[in-house]
Image (cartoon, rainbow over all chains, first blue to last red; front, side, top):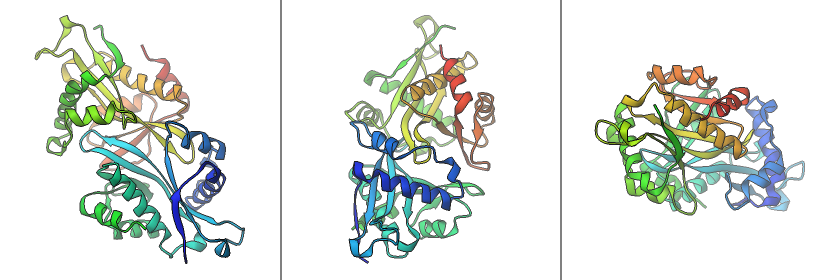
Length: 171
Length: 171
């Protein structure tokens, strides 16, 4: 299935907010979502954005049963390690269930890695709920390291050759 | 002991770099530090800084055994929760051993929380090495809760009333 990965625009915020809620439901914490598309617009698109976002979009003929063409996103921001320097933290990676298994998750993540490399970042970090085995397996298969080894959240990181390889897979 | 808390400037990078190495040594990972004073200058004081810093300084007559008046720092940056919105992440909090127990660490931390709240953040997050019991006890006493509950790193957060109170405790 054809798809595009591009930088989010302010008008994407309603779809991003929709997908954030879908992700929260998947992570079994829908009551934790406190922000709406308005905060996303304000916080992601001013002169000093708090985050960056990529959106995965499919052509009209592949729209979802609810009529959506924006079917995945990755939300990330720049962070800093006082040991290693510039890093990127990937806060969310999400693809709607009916669009999984088509390479969109990998493409989104690879594009984040690519952007990270362009900005001379040396790490891509993120966290995963430990019961989320499909996601954990996916990340480990891409060369991520599990830094926190038990129940609850896991901190994962891409660096070195694994990061280079992931960046090279960006569409 | 009298001390002041202020925003870090370019000229402070030499002392921040020194203290980063001291902190790394305390955390037993001195060989992991790859960034230099110059990296800090470029990454913290350019148009789109990757981090912000605050410095604790004592008067000349209280300088350290080696002649330093800059005796503590905190390095932080803004992050984002797709559920809760703007957040602040405290990457480092450090006070030179001979200046501990005088409220400097708490003042630095309060300042970060205050700046975070002023910027519209609803969370302050950070991590602690699990064997670092004195730091862990200090943070828990301030009203934080431990989000990741096992060996290795813990992700900590101050929010709600605890965050308000911490900010109000600033000098």
